[in-house]
Length: 290
Image 1 (cartoon, rainbow, N blue to C red):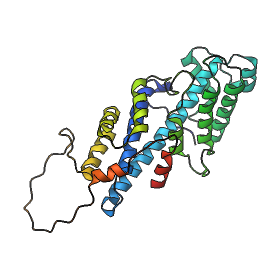
Image 2: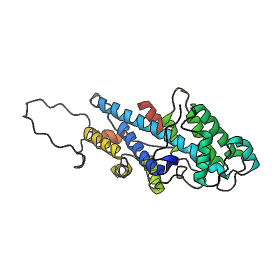
Image 3: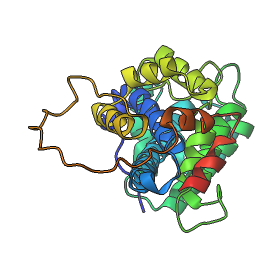
Image 4: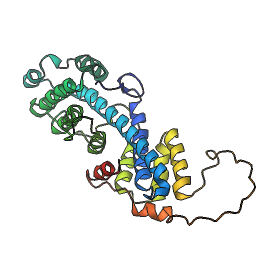
């Protein structure tokens, strides 16, 4: 199956802004999964938060793979040595302007049409060119090769022993902190990279702090913010902001009922089930929860 189109337009114009919000959404949806109590009372919420996280993770992983394919093509324009051209053969990039190089590379690889295995094969050739093609200075080299390798492993299933499906969670966790020679590897298509850096650090350091949650919410998409407030009302018992809370319904006549004992304080539960990201360890918790 081919990859979906890049978000935010052709060649990812504005893709960086989409990506910053997508990363904020990813961390918030992880928190919702991990901080939801496991008691039967929250069974419906557990299923809902996990389904939302799984769908978003799949979209984010596909977008990261597509971005890496195009960005690697732009970087390959700096491979001017005979050795690099020999490795690339017919897919060598001739254009020197970045946008033109992206267009040329896209015609070679056709990420929205090619089968995953063919795309993976091309990206492994690109990785070899980055490693052995004689790149110098701040161009190409092993860091770009790693990005190409991750895209290839995601596409051909070798990132995970289960080859029947793309390992989306592994792709996201492995690639979020990828860097090229001078910065975050996802900085080639615009976007607020300072905010992205703060988000990545917050995702690593988060231990239940409300201040970090609020910072993530400031960068998240409106649908995710809505989901967060709905979840917080259900699990943490907090009131939704006035702009989000629904219109109050007329009060019904009170009926005498016995009040059931509530579960343990959700806030305390959330503090016990915090999200940590030491290296690439956090994906294991997510996989177990899905």
